[in-house]
Length: 110
Image (cartoon, rainbow, N blue to C red):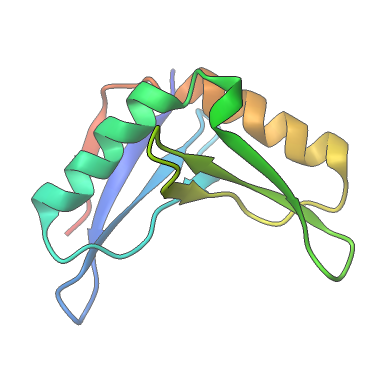
């Protein structure tokens, strides 16, 4: 089974999404959006940009862990990874987003 997106609504009425891999692990998390349609536009942007290596911003945290941001063509962050203990873990996360990001499966979780 391929990955999928889950769209959520919080108690403030804001929407967000996560991208999950086939093993049910969250591999990318979005920001908060004011509307479901804005969150769905974010999903579409991940679907479009996730296969492109140049869209990944590889970062190092102050505590030595690593993470990445996926950016749109306009350089806006559209998703952020979890924290990884090393570069190999981060690179594996990027590979997973490249594989699962184009998924067209979107589940409403609210």
